[in-house]
Length: 421
Ligand code: GTR
Image 1 (cartoon, rainbow, N blue to C red):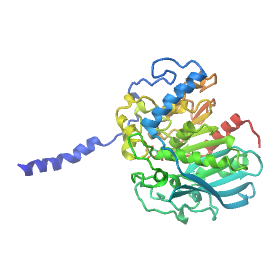
Image 2 (image 1 turned 90 degrees about the vertical axis):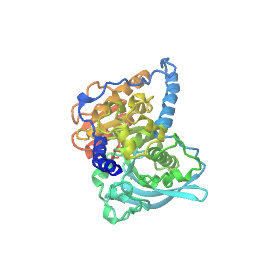
Image 3 (image 1 turned 30 degrees about the vertical axis):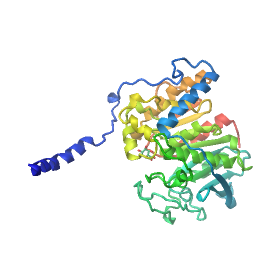
Image 4 (image 1 turned 45 degrees about the vertical axis):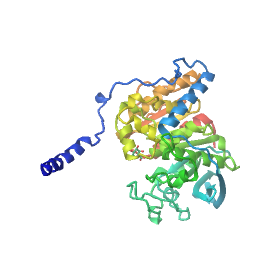
């Protein structure tokens, strides 16, 4: 009898696991009907009528995102030391100064090091500067042979979970298509980048590595995950910018692609010193409305990357309607500062329409602050950006960051900063 049961189980288990396999929905007709939480209604049901009301309501929404989505950052008891590691007066045929600055984050005998690679245009003083993480090491954004390789874990196989990979020369320059440095610097912008794995390596190790291990607190269901750690790291770079006389810390544009776009949005929401926030193809847990369950879902992201968000976020696996917030409110948290959301037409996993709808539904907050908000109601045509305090484009092509995306971001920044080189 026992043997028969085991045999039947042997036959049916694979079927059960096939049945449970995640099949993303890419059919607009199958998007469920849903009701979004209203960012302009307080928890007690009263309405946000003034700027002052908004700053209170903003606090409510922010704390929900902290406790239910990204996790709470514990009190930082350590300190950060910055060291200039290299300096080149003339880089990129003389159009930029290049430097590497190492931040040592120290708490007692625990420390990690984070390397910032910085390009500053010679042509413009007080240049706005893009701050954006890179995925595989600072040496991947340039072919220059003397940019330092990261010492921390890298995932060159893209299989997150491999714990002992180190960067090597083979990756030098491999990401240059995502970093059109000459175009950016010629338009008078600076660029600063950090390898995200320096701040928190992107694998599930129970928070024993990266910045988490520099903190003393016990973990619970509200504790921060990796996205909050990456966002926190961006703020430490901002702290450094405030000490560097060559950098205009009032014009820092925080930007990120994909998972790093989620981190950029949370950094922009958490730290008001970032003048502009840009999300490139950030998708689920970033700019896309979770309730649409289009492409990647909350349940899927929490099973693939259980360490990105706080444990409370898992309560909403296949239970999106019970979320007290949705991602349009992440965009709204950035108000009144400008924010740009970008999608790619073939990137259905990130739900371009859901990213667009976040812009539409965050707009009333900007309007309540007497600003223009987001000027579109219908999804714009491909490669036709819409500019407002919230801006948006959908580019043709796949999940990536391209020269076209950068050009749009620079146009947007020029518009807001009204600077000329
Ligand atoms: C995917 C993940 C997305 C996005 C992307 C990336 O595997 O499901 O949420 O973050 O990775 O960062 O490239």
